[in-house]
Length: 416
Image (cartoon, rainbow, N blue to C red; front, side, top):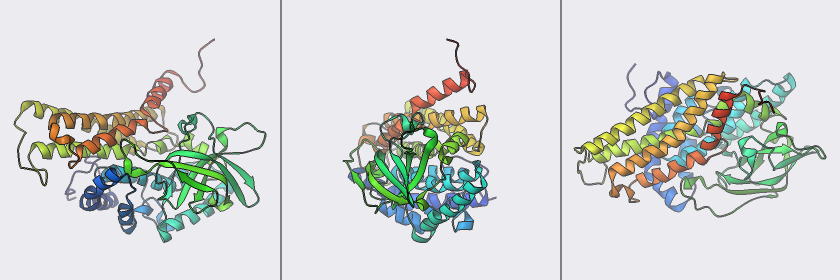
């Protein structure tokens, strides 16, 4: 098989013909369109609408919609490869695209691996046809707001946003913060807790419901001027007696909680963006030291041993990240073994912390020139720092999970 004309951000793998075709599409879009616009979204902290027009035209908004519903039918592994490639050229586009794609992947291929009753499966089949149709036929964009400023997004408490059953649908009340695609999405896939009156809220009663952007009682507020990933435009969402019909459920009652237990890899999907950012920092450093950055004087700086050593260090770390990442996405499945979960956690931590470390090394070896905003490195550095802070798997939570789950088997406790 003829090699790809570029090395993908995930490295060299045994790609299927479909993966080769889609990776080439993502690479070409990123190189020819997204890279040149990335500074614009960063400087103005505005959403990359033009990139989404390109994603829509290329069919990539329906990447993980099953072929039976008019989509491209990409699986989990293929999506993760493409997300890393897009992240290489525009982190904010890759990160927000993740929220949209997960809305289709969770309800598609991941839901297919979650135990449901025959009644739940039939209900889900009907409802996801509606949501898939909006994306395939109308080019709709879905967001996926998680955070509320509590332990809920980390899976340690029920969500404060609630949904109460009423005739024909649900009444939603609450708020979300750090809601990426705010003002850009057509539908917001909200995670909320079913309000059962006097019953104590329970995370098992988490609902996953789509709220149309035009809904009465739905509003967006707050400023957006963050350190990095500025094009995500993650403002606050408020829901005040927002009515949505039963058809807006993205999963049947109780299935999201079961899915989170069944498919831990569903929370790994933020990582490829940062693997892409790490690749971009490495690529720029090599170009810069070779005097090959477009628009810059062709001054070579590669002859200094200190710079050669730093590039070697960057490459070693990048290869380690790629290897862990690649194995994790190939192993992703329902009900993974303990070792597979540990590798998944290790891969996520390594990518989220390693991306910033590679950007740090890049700035140090490229020198003061690299801090100027007409070059991408300072933006990549700022973007790279954001990954380890993102729920539900922040760097600290991953370390906590790995330590606890290594030393305790399920159900084990220390004697009092």
